[in-house]
Length: 402
Image 1 (tube, rainbow, N blue to C red):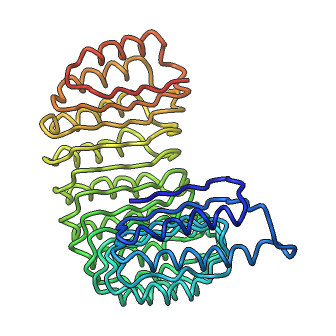
Image 2: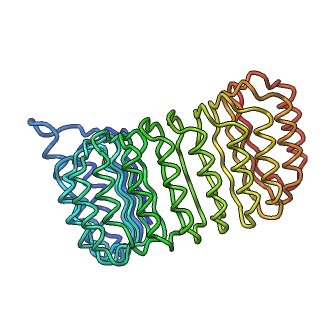
Image 3: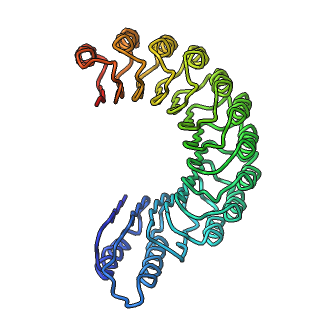
């Protein structure tokens, strides 16, 4: 296993080449991770850095191909432009992060040659990737018959539209996938685009892990969550679920209640992570729906809930959630609550939390974030921390305040 990080480093081309060339001797390497984030080369070319970057790509490609037993490859090439990396057909896992304009169609062609690939992670955050580019990637992905795990991130890729989601969803429908992570935060998708994603998910009954990150997607409304809810009836094998719809101001109470009620279908869930921060409609009624679904679980090990910046959140809402967790006293190991920037919760809320966690006999990790909760006193937090420290089962306690 080799992991190299050159984040924000200033280095000459010759020294970088020496470092990378030395790795070629490890021909039996099975895991290689290379991070060239924001690499600054002491330029030796008078015409700029394009030639240097192309030479780096050539060198990296040669090194990768020299690893005869390489199974996992992770690359972060935030500074690399123009030229695609040559990929080894024996790879089972490939991860790429880039913030620049790699030729997507060439990348897609390279991916399609990886017949043994089982897991792929592609991050195109803050790029100019468009719907047409996404077509090249997804049409090549469907040729990977062994692919089980897929992670795609398009953070703030504002040129992606509902058409791109339609292309993406059609290509991945009915695939034998076990894990899908999709990051669309800051993108301009609407309910129509999300409908396509929901239809695709309903065709993946063997899915065990699902992550949807749609933070700050201002065009999403209740219909998006209602459609997503309908797909959960087919995802009966789901063990891990991550949903992030924070700061989506047009998602209202109807959408929240529909989604939270549909979580009751996911009886095999072990890890549940939800982010609905900044939602102006989240209140005790929506949290009742969430608590009722959690109450039906019997295998939940990790629960993470971010409901910071929710102006209607109250002490009663927190009590409802904690009561819902009571049925998990024989399974829950980790609890993470972010209640920051909520002025309606008080010392009573903290006492409610402690009263309930005492009943969670297996809980060994507690994270509680209370930044800018002005009605919670320092004395109450200190008492809470002291009481938690006396609980033998709690190994990790992290309480964040101002």
